[in-house]
Image 1 (spheres, rainbow, N blue to C red):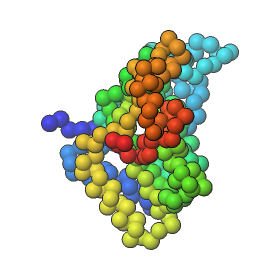
Image 2 (cartoon, helix red, strand yellow):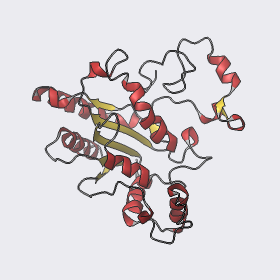
Image 3 (cartoon, one colour):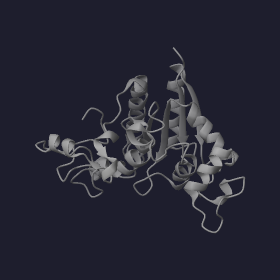
Length: 272
């Protein structure tokens, strides 16, 4: 069996953090299982977060009306993206699984990690108009979010003050990861580790270690396939798919809910 390659994109400033411990646990367990693990430690790398014309080493096509997506597509095709981007793209191309390890900031990833996504997942390399979602470029790869929250779990529920975590995760898991074709594994959420005793943090890490034993064999979260939508009609759900689902209690997914109740744990558990 060929060794699986894992890329951990890691964003925390401190090696004494819980996020660092979670990252180290992943490296240790997955390496012991025979995987090749690479870590992109974004703060240590001083990774540039802003998507600018400086990301292109050659001439830009239109300096007066600079369009990052189009210009970086041309630069990627010409081999004229900066070395920090091409190095991350190399790691991503080689990876079978990508784990994003981070503390949740303002209901999303920290700016440095969003910068990695903005700059590394370039048009042409990570997606095209034809190749996205279930037919995306990375459809043979798996990706997942592993993160800590500041709020306790009860606050991120359908009755909690922060709202349903499934809704919070939709833009990241559907709009970035699945958009690029990734099979998205259920997130690993460490609820408010800074507000629990150290034994409870140890239990959280142990749960992560246990999960990693079978991580590569897990089924991904369910998303509605691209061919269920009509490209000739503004990518609306095809009438036959809509009809087939009409009598069901829940919508298809968190985002494609058809005006129905959201399918429970759609962005947090596989097979629901």
